[in-house]
Amino acid sequence: MTPPPGNATDAFLPGPRAKVAGAPSGPLVGLTFAVKDLIDVADIPTGGGNPDWPRVHPTPTRHAAVVQSLLDAGASVVGKTVTDEVSLGILGENAHDGTPLNPVAPDRVPGGSSSGSASAVAAGACDFALGTDTGGSVRVPASFCGLYGIRPTHGRVDFTGIAPQAPTSDTCGWFARDAGTLSRVAEILLGDPLPTTLPSRLPTRLLVATDAFGFADASVQAALAPMVDRLASLIGHRQDATLAPQGLSVWQRAQRVLQGSEAWATFAPWIDTCNPRLAFGVARALIQGSMMSEAERNAASLMRIEARARMALLLPPGTILCLPTTPFAAPLKGLPLHLLNPLRERISCLTSHGGLTGVPQVNLPGATDQDAPIGLSIIGGVGTDFDLIRVAVAMER
Image (cartoon, rainbow, N blue to C red; front, side, top):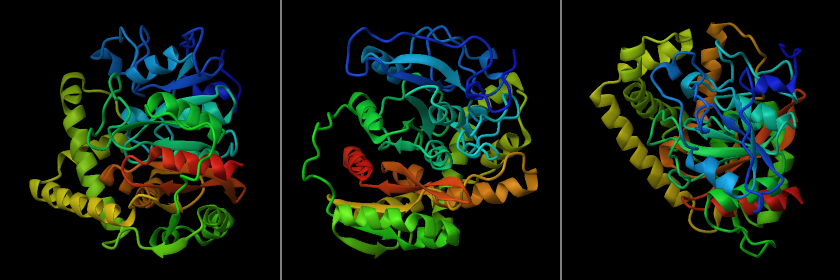
């Protein structure tokens, strides 16, 4: 039976739910989670958001490392969730599986490509959900759906058993409705226990990325201002800073070249073998990736070195930086194609630093613009994931 419009099951793949019970004991007993359809659950086909992906990708016989770790800790899988096609999307609309509900803004997109995972958590269908983030695929839906969401330091979470897109940028993150759950999952997946009480180890210096705030809609800047003030009072020292001296759009272009080139290298053998059905926007992105020249890739690689050096300079131990997660709230569903690409380009100007530099980032919910959620992000230096989580917990109190 097709669920009625707006039903929370829109987040999950059609057909019988993938359900796997967790271990009978462990720190996550009693919690349930959903799994993006790029992440393997044993004996369930991994569809990748495309009907032709399973034709040449056999059904996995074991769980992805992240799924197994969570099951071992006592959490239970309640289903596989819709993803943008082969993770090449940022708005959450899939031409094959449909658009998952944004439960807090039903007339708007949920954000992608971890759209179904965000939708399931926001609808209360599970306690947390796994997603992947290459160019913003956890951060954007977390902002649009009013959730906590984390993109961990690149390489910190085991990516075994997850379909890649662009390996130098791919990460596995997760969503939760509260910071406590976000931190409990982190204790399992990040391998570094979080103290049960908040110590005086919170960062002591907050940078406000003025170029990123200036890039966002004026209404978003106003909506996030109270959260920035609250964050500054928590940290104790506030200072304005420029995130990308070369320009946010310059960083975005470098990330697009690197990510697009790697995505083409990842998917070209599948396309050659399978000639899959692809939505126009996905096919166009892959074609653009195939056309990147060696000179463009070399220039982008040099910009990545510059961006990483800039981030290391800005974010020594004890310092975090905040910025709008997205420049606007979730767009309306069903917009025509000619309006979508400018939106994607503008969003990626505020998310490209993740894949380009590999730093961790946490979206903090709590603001609205035009009656829809909008998130404030905090980022830290490489390996400071738990510093950000401690701030998220403190902000929630």
